[in-house]
Length: 83
Image (cartoon, rainbow, N blue to C red; front, top):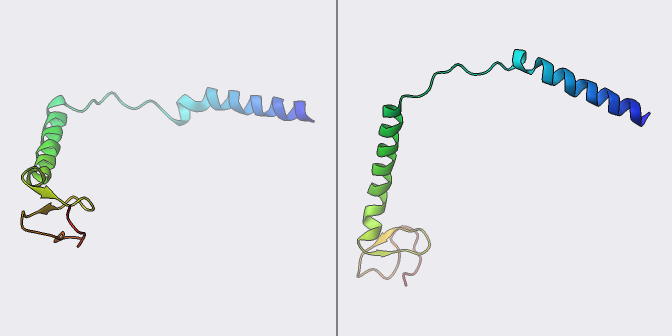
């Protein structure tokens, strides 16, 4: 019985490998232009830098990473005590 199951599984795998190119054809060769990718990456970098700018200019809450003023004792965003 176990050998019949093994043969059946092997047969199913072989059929799947044979039919795979017909069921899941290879994608067309349409690469994304490099200019589009570069613009997307540069936009993502600029957006990330904009979110990091306030953090690099002063104190930061250790709980939520919000920027804090020098005179603050507690975070204005989450209320955690600033160190």
